[in-house]
Length: 233
Image 1 (spheres, rainbow, N blue to C red):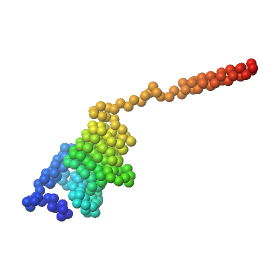
Image 2: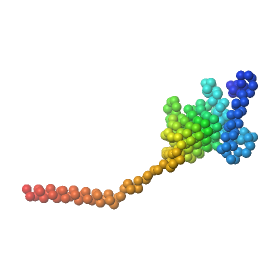
Image 3: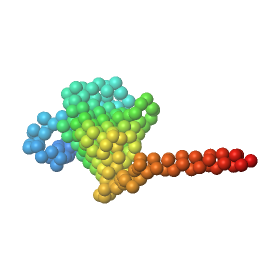
Image 4: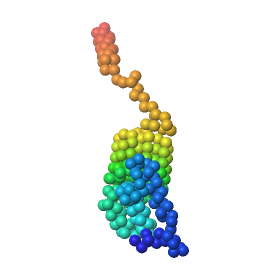
């Protein structure tokens, strides 16, 4: 905690006002994203997503100092109080907004850009016991909707959206919308992605049966011809 307190004090012994500007910026994002927000006092006291981000900054400061145990304890206290689990190693940009937030999980090697929004039940996780970078990178201005799972060392591009309940295991380019299990791109650069069903290529069982009968008739004709040739010798 002493380390956290030192971050609030500048070299001249005064309070670092940048910390409070950053906290106000976080609350301003709430007002932009959530029409239910009424006052700064209410947001400061009752928004668990906001509290989780603030707790994470403290834990991350300890993590960068290689005080991993203390960092993890702080993250678990935050998880207990907010229902949101953010590993202290995750790197999170500015103006990050977690709406509601219960059940959100963010892994150790996650990298989240600026102006990113995620909703409750989102998992930014890994796919196994791999080492190194094993969690997603979420680029600036991206949105991950309720219950979505973004798994592995993949990238969600700038301005892209992940639909509710989607499971994404491959990279998503910039300016795309992904839905489904597994996630598929349905919008790219504002245009719907055409997925032809190729109805003209659907199987025709009647035609296939006629072709089979024709083949059998031709085989019978060949056998008859061979029998005729054998009888004339």
